[in-house]
Length: 237
Image 1 (cartoon, rainbow, N blue to C red):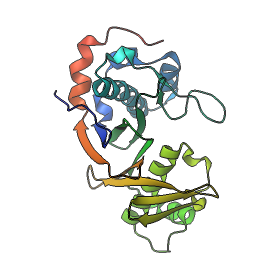
Image 2: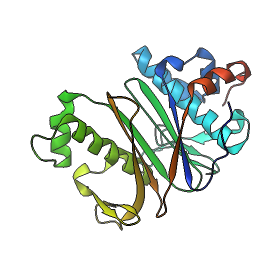
Image 3: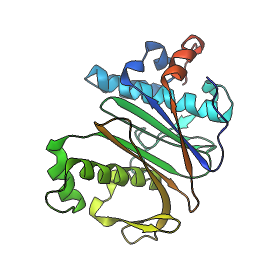
């Protein structure tokens, strides 16, 4: 497949499905990544993680014009240094974020700014929890609640905080340059926040730390994952 080279003003978003997972993709994973995949009890959860890892490397290799086995990722948690944190390229040549839930695995790649992406399947049973956590008005409908939640998670992935901070300490203020995101007492950060709609059952948001407009280009990763099966002959250590 032909994908235009990534530009500073562009964020690429790659979509895949848990069913895209193939055993060959595990050969693209590091030892800690394979251990984490094997720790999942449900096959669908394992497949989501495998597809997320493979799509991350293939999307980065496509954006950088290098072989996928030259894409070195690290996942150290900021708190405990264990390999379950936000994925980063060792040389920081690109910024990326990964999310998976329900029927989707999604990877965002940005060449110039920190990025966060989140996908959630809309579950009416979780609405009351979200309303309470975000301080939303009572009676907020499921669609609005999940749109607010994915925006929060995407922004906190971009800042690197994740859900280690209290959602109630995060505020969003529209500005002429984008969305001002404030976490606790820290200085506000301007982000470009985009809502994406893969289908009626899922809500997705991507947040890029930038004071200038960022274009989001979306691609299917399914063909990327399938096309590269025959070339996955190596193991990342």
